[in-house]
Length: 207
Ligand SMILES: [Zn+2]
Image 1: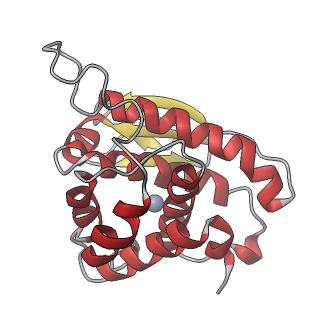
Image 2: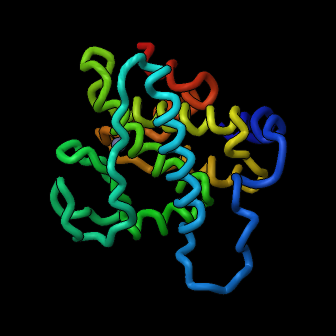
């Protein structure tokens, strides 16, 4: 999986860093490591779906409420925030992100932070699609849509892939998963993400 990124994508991507990573680097304030990427990801992904979903799916789109970064154990519309996780809660159509999970993600390169945000948003998007087109379980489809939104954002030159991201993509594609994990094997997750990344979100609805 690494080869694709080191050749095609990295060289295809025109420039510097995923937008806005330049500012603020090196200042010694106490902002969490994920903070800037998290903010950019939320801004980019939420805007992307607001603009694109009605056109892509031919139906009204309701943006999820973003409850933001929460400590594990915080009450949510779907019970306590679990450790090391991010959740989409269908009961109140909201997304929320564990502080510990974002920290862990940021430790493997900012790509994972973007994926965490895009993945939960994807569940909110899938929730609004007709049952017949939503896979069960929907985890690999959500991963495809994460790649689809992020790939489109790169194609739209909202986000840019930089060379340091290679490591982040490798981490994304080598995430461990236990046998029977509904998120699929690392290989399945990588393939799903790449389908969306290369072909856009519509490809995530082909069987
Ligand atoms: Zn999921």
